[in-house]
Image 1: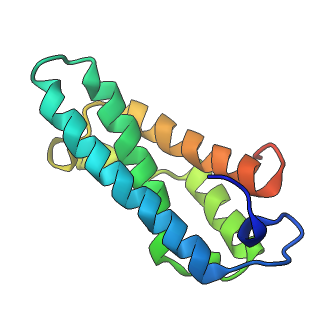
Image 2: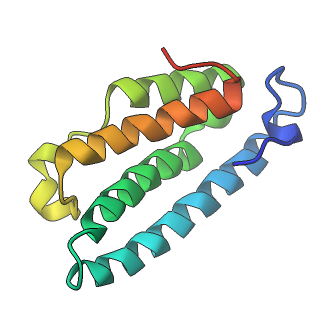
Length: 126
């Protein structure tokens, strides 16, 4: 995501609705992308990694878009830190979730949350 007035680090111009729309658009894009990738897995198992990464990113963006975490910068930071430390428990649902490798999914989930912390807060994650 590119920084603009809705994501300024000092909090001025914070626009919860605009951010939610941006996160939702990104989640929808990732959902379509992952669907395309899944169709390619049968031809080349190398796409499994891309599928897991896209699903992890989808979970991050969708969760933020539909939650109350965008009401303030601090809420967003708290949510991203929580996500960074506690990815969803996919291991128990892996056969049904479409995840090919639960550990890879968790690492991608954490990485996405970390990258958003760096982007929005110009700081390295905890």
